[in-house]
Amino acid sequence: MAMGWLSHRLPDFITIHGPVDISLRGEEDPVSFERDLIDIRLSYGRFHYREHSTEEIAVDAVFPVCTPGFLAQHGPVNTTANLLALPLIHTDWGPAASSFPSWRSWFETALLTPGRDIQRGLTANSSKAALDLALGGLGVALGQGIYSADLIEKGLLIRPVRRVLELGQPYCLTIPQRSARKTAVSAFRSWFTNECLRSIKSPSLTI
Image (cartoon, rainbow, N blue to C red; front, top):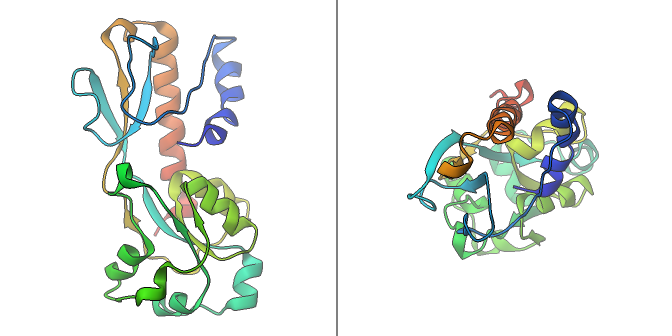
């Protein structure tokens, strides 16, 4: 999960719970909880930390998003097939996240088979970076709900079609036993889970 998404929300946590020592780190799974003294870890997928207590937060989904200006210039988009003719922004999740959806897999849910040229266009290495390209009016991205909700609520992005595709794995929180009873960790867990669910289940994303 992008650090920016979390850092923009941390002032609310501090306002509620007061000053607390927090160190944010963005690293690929798996990580060493003991070596790095990690108290709480957000991961994509259930399978990284079987030796620790892990709970599923939510399953996110992706759907097409673009700016109103882009749609006004390139639209209208009346059907899913119309998107095949538009500039698409791709997200290269890398081999470690192969269960994340692609434009090809999204089109296939609509029983459409894109040609070989589906991969042409701009590519970003994270869903947040892909959204930034879409915000620049450069094309249509597959936006994750957790990152897109605020932007859609503010009118910065719109959904040209409503079809969604769920991610292949849930987002999960892992807390080692030594940290489970810490008051700050427990408070952060509850607050963070609510923030994630508030984004993913935002009314702006209702199908």
